[in-house]
Length: 138
Image (cartoon, rainbow, N blue to C red; front, side, top):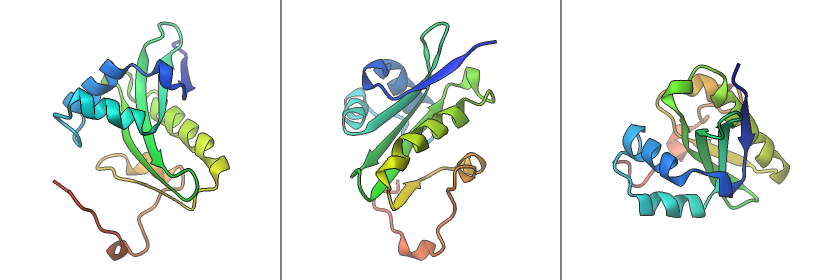
């Protein structure tokens, strides 16, 4: 059985692999350039899951935060060949554990297909969605 390990070491992030996932396989950022992806990585808290036996990165997420009041969880991706093995849970569990000591008041995310996963970690639909606005939805 393959063992997977969570880590938040920026130096371990396989930037080429993450760029390929996000720019080619994600539904939210197809066509994102490598320069933009690298800038996003550089400006974020980064997390990953690795195959402990091969060292290959199999998942990625990043968080944009002020470190005091707010965080945005984004670019969450699990490689298609390892989905349904608990890797998404391992990733989100690690992210939440890293951020909890900050005492953030609010953490947001957007998803089209993983509501059930995020609900397990306390994410819910906003009580009053009319209070939230988005610029640049397309």
